[in-house]
Image (cartoon, rainbow, N blue to C red; front, side, top):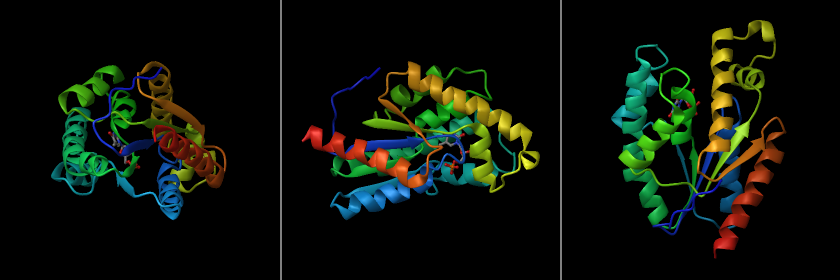
Length: 215
Ligand code: TMP
């Protein structure tokens, strides 16, 4: 299902989402190089940010287990509001191709698995309360949770995997797929079990087709 609201800017917003270890950050870096090499003005951004006070607090305190799920949700949304106002909107208004490594779909997928809150309500808050712009396309880099965790931790043996984290990633993956099937955004599910260059080529072709078709 696709919901295209009238765009209020000249740029393009392409979002890469996926569970930990899905390869989205590596894919973004390669896409940035490839798109720049053919002349596009690309801005790579990621969330949580490393710039706003809320992004910094999140990156520092969350790994130490110091935040409740409710506090995390508030920090992700405050950080995103800062990001939209100070980085995302200015780049889009400047006509740039924005590659965004995680966005409010991550909040929907991750935070809904640890709170009694449906992803629909989380997405609604991002769209209505902070007016987060709608992406042109959201790519969901889909991998099985075992593969994501193995890649993220650099280990291959299932015996070494952290089962609590695995259980969470299974739920997050399911939530992403549920969002892609039932939300109004323009989603493309990418099989990220494939080698990185194949994943990058597939996304690159879709991005360049989208830009060319809108001209
Ligand atoms: P990263 O691995 O892409 O740097 O993201 C850091 C972690 O933050 C990752 O485990 C996913 C999590 N996260 C959320 O739980 N909610 C969010 O809204 C975002 C942006 C990230």
